Image (cartoon, rainbow, N blue to C red; front, side, top):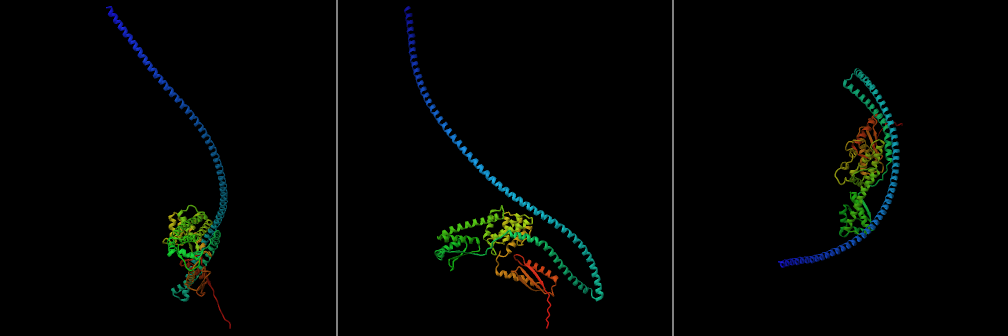
Amino acid sequence: MINTTSIVIISAAIAIVSILIGGAAGYGLRKHKWEKKAANAQHDADHILAQANEKLASAKAEVEKQKLQAQSIKKEAQDAKKEKILEAQEEIHQYRERVDNELNQRRQEVSKQENRLLQREDAIDHKDNLLDQKDAKITQKENQVKQLEVQVQEKQKHADELISQREKKLLEVAKLEPEQAKKIVLDNLSDQLISERAQLIRESNEEVQAKADHFARKVIVEAIQSSAADTVSEKTVSVVNLPNDDMKGRIIGREGRNIRSFEALTGIDLIIDDTPDVVVLSGFDPIRREIAKRALERLVKDGRIHPARIEEMVDRARKEVNDDIYEAGENALMELSIHKMHPELVKILGRLKYRTSYGQNVLAHSIEVGKLTGVMAAELGLDEKIAVRAGLLHDIGKSIDYEIEGSHVEIGVELARKYHEPDLVVNAIAAHHGDVPKLSFIAELVVAADTISSARPGARSESLENYIRRLEQLETIAKSHQGVAQAYAIQAGREIRVMVEPDKISDDRTVILARDIKNQIEDDMEYPGNIKVTVIREKRAVAIAK
């Protein structure tokens, strides 16, 4: 029993010891494994820490480098900022100097304008005083006229009574029929009325002439003195000089290809004849003729003449002429101080540089009319800018009247309306030849300025045939009136002298005859300037002593 128990106890003890020895051995093995893992982890941590320290050092170095670069960039930016500030200060200083100079110039201009305005105000005040005086005189004359009307009515009443008494006496003394007596009275009354009518015409003409002549002469003379223009000759051909006659053959080209190409590109006839060293360009369009002339002159100077070169030179000449046309229009506007005109209308205006009328350059004529109209409008207190604009554009239709159907007046009106010119300008263009009624006094001034510019001596040339026809028409009109013995047109048609038969025309009737001839000339003839009508009545008594 004891042995079995002992064996059991010993076996249990052995089992426990075995278990304890196995657990100790397993614990040792696990501890060794854990220690190895810890060592490996520590090694990995040390390696990671070393890499982190290396990267940290590298990052610190990079940061230091970037700080240095940032400091360098900041310094450069500060230096650039200082330079820009200095440049800006210099520009501000220069700008201030320019502004100060412009302000000084503006102040001087304003001062001059103020002086002009003060002078104009003084002139206006003086004119107002004169107008007030004229109004007072007119009022006084109106009162006198009313008194005279009352007296005339009284005298008329008295005359009717006298005529009635005279008729009775005539019937009683002459034993005439009433119709015969009436005829005698009417004949006497007609002679009396003719005398009174002639006297009234003379007095009214003298009074109106005395007042109007002085003022009109002053305005027109001042306007003419402020304007001067050159004259040119009207022509439809241009001449190009050649260095030698051999150049003619090169211009013609092989089988005429050069001359055909030139004429097709320019639209101008090239006339090559026996005249030495000269080629003639013929065409009615002055602009195309100018393009052809410039192109041919360059071809002759260059020496290389063939269709491709001709086309190149014609294109270049066309561009230059178009530039000259626009520049001429702008120069005209600058000369007359006109602003805000449509560019297309400026170009059309410049075309007048190559247009002539009766030998007078139309652009120069238009500028002159603009100046004259402006001066006269300023003297009369009208809108000077509109007047200058209307005078400049009055012949604008002549720039394209050979390209479009219609008169230059109709074309000018259409152009002015198309490019939105003021209504006063449109009416002045339409009415400057009397085609439509004049709606403003500016239109009247444009007509007067146009007449002055075109009728002054040397302004225009006129063919002999037209000149002779105008003189004959003048004399025919004068001779068509009853009682005219002879009529002579003198002073280049600016005066007509009429000799009357003294037995048929009395002194009083000469005044009426001069007025009737003047009216017929105005209705039937077209002429530049004025025509003076002089009626001469001379009574001669001849006796011969033998």
